[in-house]
Image 1 (cartoon, rainbow, N blue to C red):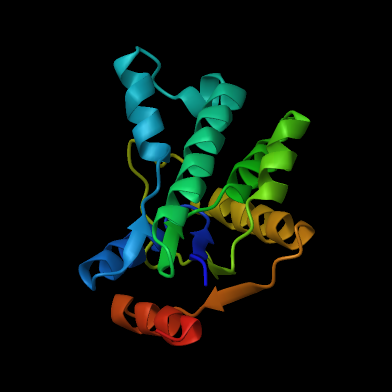
Image 2 (cartoon, rainbow, N blue to C red):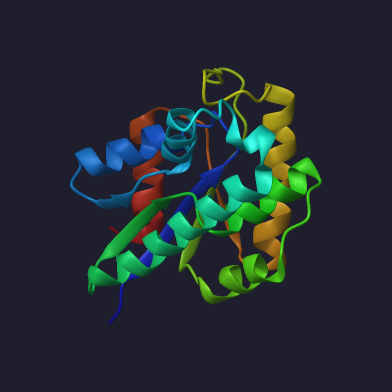
Length: 179
């Protein structure tokens, strides 16, 4: 038996990180989103919005970090590991902004195979923006569409997480995963 790798994805402000934190509190193995850390590291280097000023570099750093997370998950033999976003999210965001990316981005996504992918739809009632999340709700909806298209292009069957309380959403995910 090997590590079961499960992605929780969706546009900004859909509740992904909140669900991952709830899963962690319940004792599940979760690898948290790294984009905020990449953004904060860039700010320390004097770049206010790396994604806006150099989207390819930002995306390369994200891809490297998420690829590392994917590989690190194998250390948890015979366990289930949840990811707050997968490597494929990088392509979806690059497609959203209309930027091109090198073929190694696609090859990295082909090599990273997840067992399940849960997707959270944009939910205006919980959506907020902050210093690291600058997208509007309308943009969040467009990002969602790009995420769906990207994962489907790699032959993933996405599992929609219904709106509800954090407990209802985590219970849905755990029931679907048979945990």
